[in-house]
Each structure stands twice: as structure tokens, then as C-alpha cells.
Image 1 (cartoon, rainbow, N blue to C red):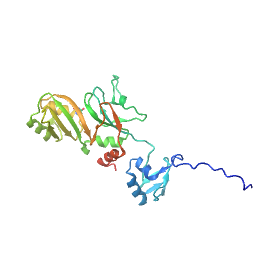
Image 2 (image 1 turned 60 degrees about the vertical axis):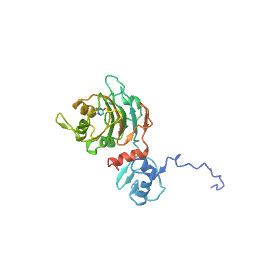
Image 3 (image 1 turned 45 degrees about the horizontal axis):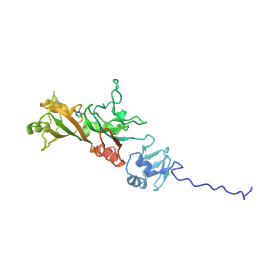
Image 4 (image 1 turned 135 degrees about the vertical axis):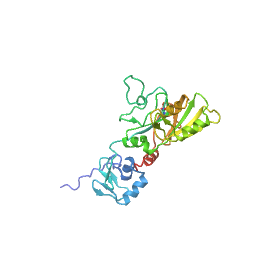
Length: 255
Ligand code: URA
């Protein structure tokens, strides 16, 4: 055996080149919790990689490894997307339209199939969330979670305080009870009101106002579950930050 054979020395691969990532990042990227919380879970011995407990901070894993926390699999193989769009007018919220009208998915084009969280009418503008995370979307739209939707409404005439009170108390429309809500009338212009609803029924704002004799001239959703379109012009969108996604998941009890 020739022991003098020169040893081939190659550049050491960085962890990103070898495809390995830190375990705490894997857990955070899966949307399970923050990296700091992941470190706590790792140290406490509840995290397993391919069936073996890994409690060493700084441990690295491959994205295809099977990671479990307290027995539940955690996966980043399916990349989740979370978007907030400032919806413009004349765009519909369905994913496809047989009349070839413009849909929100014509604005937010993604490789992965995503869908809108709830609906906005064609001429309603403002905050629309889109995602491929079915569980989060389901919980954000389910009435039992009482997610707040804040609307700025422009009416055809000034809203009377007595009518505002009726809306706030929760009207009964065609035998259907609307949930109580909060309502503010702008002092500068009493045709402008801000309503915060927690149910998400179809056309609910228009139905409420039409029922008591007002016409909704303009409707803009200012926020959904606390996410606003601040900094986005109509027709523009952005990805939610990791902090916002964690906040939404906590809000509906996913984490
Ligand atoms: N209520 C409505 O009437 N329309 C919307 O688009 C959203 C809420």
C-alpha cells in the first residue's frame, strides 16, 4: 500500500451546500414555532430525528429527514405560502371564472396552488389573504373563531346614530341573526363609517346597510385578523412575515 499517496484536499462544504440546515431552523420553517422556542423544545428532549431523540442545540438535519415533536411529524417538504393582497375593484375572488373575468389569482401568480381566505365582492377593495395552508384558512374563516374584519364603508347618506346602534346590537335579517359588532361614524363625514365584524357571512356589510335603508357606495376592507394593507397600493401584494404567520397560527390555536 502506498502510504505516501498525496491526500486530496478539497474545500470543506458549508452546511447550505451539503443541504443540511439547523434543526431549530427546520422546526421554525415548518411554521411550528420560533427558533428560540424550537431550541427550548430540542433541549427538553421532545424532538426526534428519524426516530432518535436529538437534544443537542446546533444539530443539523436534512430537509427530507423525519422530524417529530412530542410524536407529531413536522415537515417543511410542502412549502406554505401566506400572502396579503390589497385587492383592487373589478377583480373577483374565485380561483377560476367561466366568463374569463379577472381573478385575484391573475394578480398573485404562484407555482404552488394557493387560494383566497374567504371572499370579497367584485367591487370591494382591500385586505385579502391568500395561502395554501388549508388548516389556517379554514380556521380564519370559521365563525367560531370570531376573527375581526374591519371595513370602511361609504354610504349614500349620513348614518343616523339610532341605526348605528341597531347594527351594533346585531340585526335580524330574513330570520338570520347577525352578530353584534362595533361601529364608528366619522365625525367629519357622517356618510363614512367603520364597522368591525367577526362572522364573515356573504355580502354581510351590504346586507346589513341595505336592510335598514342605506346604499353602500364603496367598501374597503382595512384589516383581516389584524393584518392590514399598509404600504401596499391597490393591486399590490406581499408575503406575510414569519412573525405575522406565527401570530395568525396562535390566534386560531394551531400553535
Ligand atoms: N361584505 C360585503 O357586503 N361585501 C364584501 O365584499 C365583504 C363583506
